Image 1 (spheres, rainbow, N blue to C red):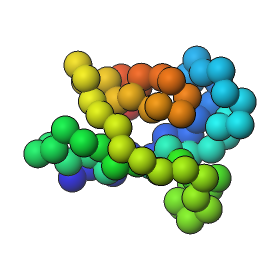
Image 2: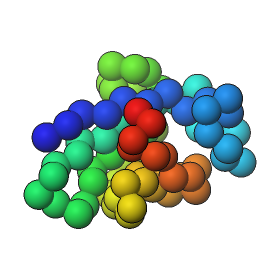
Image 3: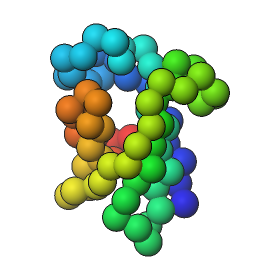
Length: 76
């Protein structure tokens, strides 16, 4: 299992929902499952929860529904 923590900034991602700017996306990627569990937090440690849910990977791209963006896992 691989843990991923990404800071959501407009410099790195093209998204339109300003309320997520500066927050952190946490995901646990399990190679054996198509479902990726994630949470969006206000802090890097993942304590101050904003939202959580499930998402997926398609063509090595991880989808973040709240910001309607795909993240290329090869670039991370």
